[in-house]
Length: 283
Image 1 (tube, rainbow, N blue to C red):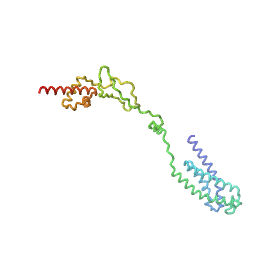
Image 2 (cartoon, one colour):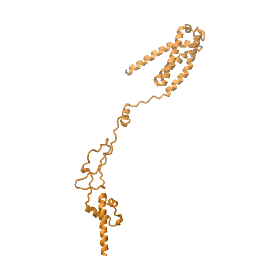
Image 3 (cartoon, rainbow, N blue to C red):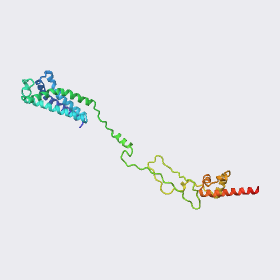
Image 4 (cartoon, one colour):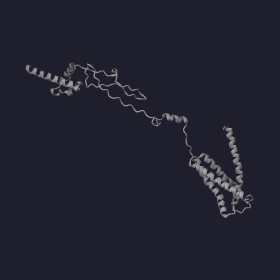
């Protein structure tokens, strides 16, 4: 519905409510006069009853939850009370001309007492319930609904775990590569082979290493002949005493295999023994 249509609908509603209030106002004024209200109080009495009904209706439109249900209960209670008093006004013709006895709304005493209690308690109830409704409306904070664009952006920024999507398991490190023997070439067991692994920065997924590493990616191996190993051993152990010529120390110094270290140990000891014997004969 367009704006002019909405305005006409509201104006029609206000007109109908105003005419209904005028009809109810006549009955409630006569009831107030019958229970002892003066002229001014009787004129204001309909505003106390029907006015609180309008206030409760507005509060029910603004509030939510339990507060809204409370406003609807107040609206229902005062609607029933106004209906009952208007009904009594139609049943007792004497109320129209003001000829009824003061405080007399029904011939049967219990009904009369109940009606007088109802009519006199409505102003007090208007003070209590009206103040409570106004306080609830003033302290009401409507829930803030997120903007659709912001909600979509929040969903995008959330992690996959928060969105309920399956996570990709982190790839495990590739297994260590064993040293493969090369035909015709003897490889030292002590030489540590390191394969450079290129890791892309900010890669979304990690791939597992499969297959054999190509030869171009392998580190070059240093292979020494037995003569070169013996020469290096003579240079390194030249100042060592005979007791320090052990296979373990030679292996660590030359970074070679234990088998070759033992061979070098025996060779160096034999050379030391032969040298000592030659010096003894010469002396």
